[in-house]
Image (tube, rainbow, N blue to C red; front, side, top):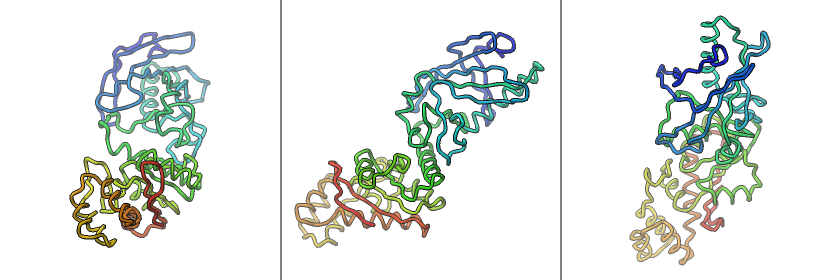
Amino acid sequence: MGLITAEFPDPVTITLPKGQTPAFTLATEGRGKDWARAGIIKDEGDDPDVTHQALILSTVRFGKSGSGIVFKAGAGVGMMTKAGLPIAPGEPAINPVPRAMMTQVIENIAGKYAVSNDVEIEISVADGENLALKTWNPRLGIIGGLSILGTTGIVHPFSCSAWIHSIHSGIDVARANGFDHVAGATGSTSEATVKKLYDLTDFALIDMGDFAGGMLKYLRKNPIPEVTIAGGFGKLTKLAQGYLDLHSGRSQVSFDWLAQAVRHLGGSAGLQDQAHQANTALEVLTLAQTHNLPLAQFVAERARTAALATLRGAPVEVEVIVIDRHGEIIGRAR
C-alpha cells in the first residue's frame, strides 16, 4: 500500500492462515522512486528465540510485466543450498506458508487498486547473518542468514514440536543429499566426539537433544542406512530403560533399574544396595567402574535394543555410544 498510495497503515493488520487478524506497529517505513519499505520489531513473547527484538524488513518493487510475484533474500535472510527442505536450492529461505500469505496480500491489494501484481518482495533481517550462526540453519544448508518460517503464525512457547520439526528437517536434508550415516547426540560433548570419530560433516549431525523418540520415529518412516546415537551416561540410561523423551522434567533415571543392572553384571549385594541408594547416575557409574563392572557397555546395549524396538524393523542399523564428560567413549553397542 505504501508503494501504491504512499500511505503506510500503522498499525498494520494481517490475516493468519487460521483466520486470526493480529496488528503490528511499524518500527520503520520508507519510500523511494520505485520502492517502498516497512519493518517491525519481532517480540519473542514467552518463546526463547535468537530473533527477539530483531528488525524484520520488507521492501517491495514493481517487476517486469509478466514476472509475477518474485521473492528475494535481502541482507540477513539465507539462501537454500541443499535439497530436502520445502524450498528448492537456489531460492531464498522463505517458507511456503509465508510465501502464500504474502502472495495473497499482493493479489488482494493489486486487485483493489487495479495495478499489476508483478511485484518483487525482498525480506531482510537486521544482523540476520550473525543471528543465523546461533541456529541450525548452516547444518540444513541455509547459508547467509535466517529463515522466514511459519505454518500457523502462532508461536507455542519453547515447544517440543518445534524442536522435533527441526530434527525432521535435518533427516530430510541428509536423505535428499544421499547420506548413508547420520548421528544424533544428546549434547555438544557427545556430538563433538561422534563427529570426530566418523569425520562426519555437519549435514550428517541431527540435533536430537532429548528427543530420541522424535528422531527414531521419523527414521522409521524415512530410513537412513545407519544412525549413531551418542550421549552421556545418564541420558542414555533413560533410553535403556525405554524412555524416548530424555528431558529431566519428563523422564527420570531409575536407581532400581541401575541396581538390577549391577546385579546382572555380577556386582555384590552391597554394591547393588549402594547403587540403589545413590543420588546420581554418575555416582553409580563411578561405583561400577571402581569394581570393573562394564555398566556403560550394558547401558549402550540396552539403549540400542530400545532404539531398535522403536524402529520396528525399519532398514536402519543402530549404534549407541556412551560418552563421559571428557568426551571419551566408555560404552559402545553396534
